[in-house]
Image (cartoon, rainbow, N blue to C red):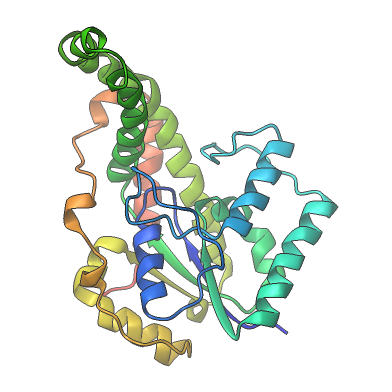
Length: 276
């Protein structure tokens, strides 16, 4: 029998860690073992390691990067991997009356999870493509800069005054469109799910709005969906200074069809966004 299950769904760097942190503070079980914090998520990722590992295994077996930062490539799940997923879900249903998980690669397997967890509810987090891509690029640049700053004084100085700006610009030139395609693909997976779900089985929110409307979202989770939670203020976990700034990326996007497609995706979400 399926326990009460909440699936937190959203593209990488969309605020799903922040939302899941808040849910955990409200008393929801979000995983026995969570991915540790790192410089890109200093407050923690709040990703269930069990789901993360099986998602990475599936991606590897399809010769795809474990990051899951891919476009619309086809992904096949073997019978063995499907049984492992069933086992994870079975154990969680046995241990907990209500539980949740967040792992961005979940977006790539939504059809499978809909079959395995037919009574689950979906908390969908959306974030505009400019903010998401900037956050991804900022994370990539941090890893590059970290290597240079670990070198001796002369090379560090050369990096700061001569290489840093050029390498950062090249990073944006080479990866902005790629990440835009990933953003489109992930959100198209989400939209395809929403088209199939009954309206009472999902709520779609922009994470930035939760700062002002957390009580209304909390009430929906507890009253409409019946999750047994205790209220914890979202402002206690929301730290504005950790949110990535979003300079205009359009100059780095030469493919006009990609921009048009992204705008269509953002428009398509408007009919699903919950208004608070």
